[in-house]
Image (cartoon, rainbow, N blue to C red; front, side, top):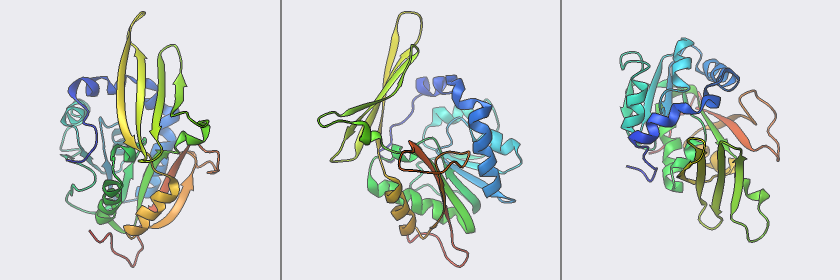
Length: 251
């Protein structure tokens, strides 16, 4: 078990309620990039969840295998696709191994931050490398910490303020630990409060983790539409390659 928060049955049952995450505008470019990188090979998703990305990628013709820490999330997935078509191993993405090797390993929607120590994040990169064939790719989607928005003395940054949901992140600038706070409207009068914990990590730190795992940089974009990544980009999609002549990781 890693330091990640564990998503329980109640949280898993609500996960698919966020229709924006499942829109064609969001999933289309994501699946396009992943299918291109997978090519004729198979893909492995770390933290597969309820299959938001894996199922449409599978429908695109890419064989997908998953690793997921939460059994309740896998239970929701099983209402969509059976284990014969999309096998999933319950375990953490830093250490869990699955059979076979893959042309693509991917980790989306800021989930690297769920590993709350630097050592675990380094091991996640190494675990990705261990599953890759030479020439294969590791892809992550991750937000850029919003620390630039904080004036001196402030510890919180809002990321959404709407009638249905208010969310903000609090940051510890010494430990790189953070917490996302969510106030979500559940009916006309009441709100549900929930938190998730994370360790924030900069793109340059990700590059160093990839280097330690024996991977080389291949691309970095601001989003799945391959927009240019700049100093003002709030997120990044980063791609590293297993060298054709190399072997993955040292762990």
